[in-house]
View 1 (spheres, helix red, strand yellow):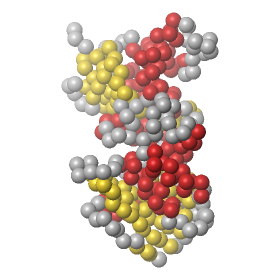
View 2 (cartoon, one colour):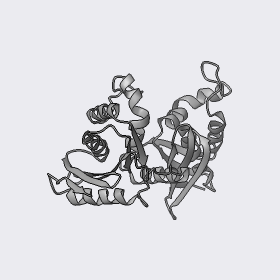
View 3 (cartoon, one colour):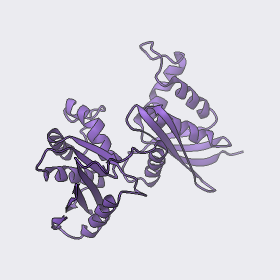
View 4 (spheres, one colour):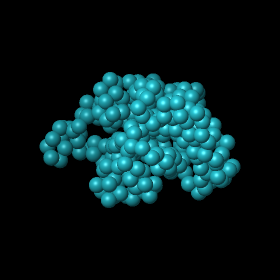
Length: 303
């Protein structure tokens, strides 16, 4: 009997890392209805959540299947394609005779692989792949989001919204500032860019408008912006703006500009729920959408 054909997208999320984590999976059978799975772990790591997502997705298949499994985790991809055969031969020890990290999950994944014919495919995260983005959203939602410090009166609150139209290679961004009862809105239009680049640019340009060194909270829909600014950027600077794989960091110039701003201000980044954003985040998104055809949005003051 021929194996059923299934496509799976998985993703894991952990913030802070280590900390509360979630995993998500989208299962697309060749025939039948799409399925979505997710789960939460109180204390874990990002790599463990990436692994857990693949395990749970494969476990959910009632029958042995021919699977195309997409992951944005190089850790998972390399573990499967490069490291696991030797780990298995060496009784789950590394070449340095150390116990393999996350051995329990690797062994569980190894057991699930025996039931199926799996083709492992890497997809770049946050690159507008619909199913990858959905798996990410499931993982983040399952993890649970931090409570937002919206009522902190001693800080400047910046709510970012962006829009990007790939077909015309044009986008816009808006930033709504709130300090106590004072408001200001700025924004700009951008051509020949990308959604990720605009997210970074909007944060950088917003911070450049600040005159006083007050604590700052930035609210964004972009996990890429938050993780880059709070986790990855220090390593990039130490590596001369190269990734661990020896590649030049994407959007280097924008990240460098943001790094200079972060040296000036104490900034906390918060990822908002796209389905239920704070009202000011929603306003910023609407303004960005309205400004996409304009080149010089006006600065607007409210009080």
